[in-house]
Amino acid sequence: MDKQTVRLIFIHLLMLSVFWTGTSAAALVVAFFFFVWRGLGLTIAYHRYFTHRSFKTSRAFQFFLAFAGSMCMQRGALWWAANHRRHHQYSDTENDPHSPVTGSFWHAHMGWALEEKAFETDYSRVRDFDAFPELRWLNEHSDLVHGIYATFLFLLGEGLKIFMPQLSTSGLQFLVWGYLIGGIAHLHTIFLINSWAHIYGKRPYPFPAREGRDNSHNVGWLALLTFGEGWHYNHHCFPMSARIGLAWWEIDFGWWVIKILEKLGIVWDVKTAKRPISS
Ligand SMILES: [Zn+2]
Ligand SMILES: [Zn+2]
Image (cartoon, rainbow, N blue to C red; front, side, top):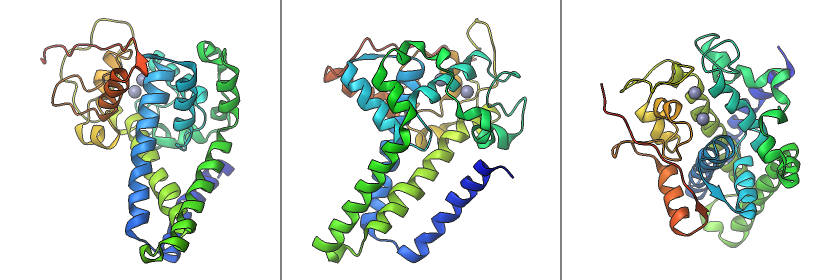
């Protein structure tokens, strides 16, 4: 067993420390808040912005997006974008970094990310963002973001323990719930897009004529957990669209937030696609 797999198993086992730290309503609120934060950070920042450039924004907000996304357990923004661009280029073929069609479900789910070769960032695929030194720096130091995030959670929990003891919480409780359990839950929802949504679900209309078909599917329940990512067939058909849930009933929380950011003037030139008629 390689050391990355050992580390991953260890992180999962670490969740058992919840039986020692205990649970409180405050810890559950923090876990939920940061599950939402990470979910939106992943889909809006890493996926829709850094990978597909589906909207434009300022350099400052761009950095904020990279920082927010770095709080997920999915390495730096440029690493993520480079891999995902490759996924779109070679979907479900031998060159796809994660496909349950050419490899196993486990490999597509997370085995691929644990391989030694998967740790390198292929900067040749993200030359557009590599031009910003602050983004390259953050990409190389995403662990620092985790340090800041974990310290913040711990201090918040300890502060509440001192000043609001009636909440029965602590810094360690916030770490276990807000960082670990919420983070791992989010990690698996995103990995299910690469594994489950490339096998099961619906392909409700013909794939638009373009090169490179694939085995992506729309999975409604997964879209709710991933803030819109689960409409994965829509996304593979129209990867440049900032809106992934294309029908009115295809709930896409990430899109709602982008619309708010657009109304506030924080993002602009937002690209969208129209849903074709179902077959
Ligand atoms: Zn895909
Ligand atoms: Zn994509």
